[in-house]
Length: 368
Ligand code: GDD
Ligand code: MG
Image (cartoon, rainbow, N blue to C red; front, side):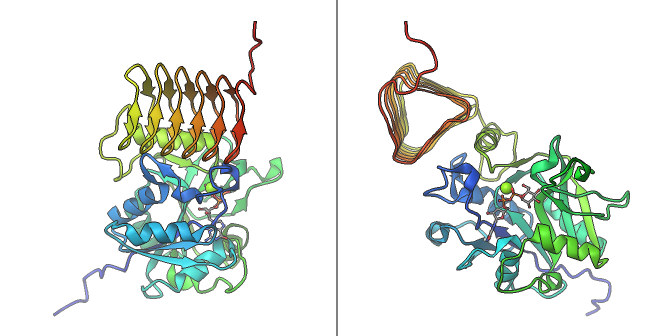
């Protein structure tokens, strides 16, 4: 058989970085690591794994550290149609150290592409196209880039007209460093042999150490700007937005089969006079009382919301209890918290896990 002209399909494997502490999403991440928080009915990580599967990736390594047990028990019971392997760092190794450690769980050869995903980005990226660009340009690393209005919280990645990465500036500190609106969108392809060059056994930041080093060494680092949907769910209001976008169908996921105005999960009970809309998700077994209005929010499982409650752009933790006539907007209520009747939570308020707030303990308006 003549094989000379055939393009032999390389192995397609991926590493999903899910070991961070999710500090900016506390208190939601006290019990549950960020990628395991439910978004549109399933852990966020499931949306990412299924998108990887649909792009032809056959094996994905979950690089875990913080609350690794939560991933292990979920994956043991899940059948996602893709080989999922868990690599657990005993001490967090940073993004680069995690990639290095997880790579020992891969099966491909030194020239095969390895797709790396941050565990908290929701994207419409054409993963297949990114891998093809990587291979066609014989790159060492190919980064998926997106453009944002305020790039300061991200890794800045200016490129040449041909798409070669010129610099990598993680979380710039000074105005002079804001040289572009293109950022690392949290997905990139490494040629496997390049991963072997990352130091082993110590914390390493791929953004602060490895990308700048590869550039300084003159290796081929490409950037592909994709104009499609992109969101980092690492902060509460972005988490809500990502969930809403999945529910209404603005963001693509194989795990959302029927996008619509809201998503009400099994055994949830919503009073006939209540209104649930704007891409809200009501979790398994939660209850919503009479005349309550829940808009563009996420209510986790087993929560109990009283009557005449208004909730907008907020996250209500698992098993929490919200008393009658509360008003909650742009806020987070932790798991199993109890918020007494008549409270008002607004503008970034966070009620801690298990906290108990008495009736009318917080009100913004003056009682007459
Ligand atoms: N296994 C493991 N071990 N994973 C880790 C560790 C670790 O020690 N530290 C962080 N991670 C994972 C997180 O769980 C997350 O999925 C990913 O690495 C990125 O960490 P974040 O904490 O979310 O980083 P960021 O949002 O501030 O910045 C990153 O993402 C931006 C895009 O959203 C950087 O990659 C930026 O360059 C990028 O622009
Ligand atoms: Mg992030």
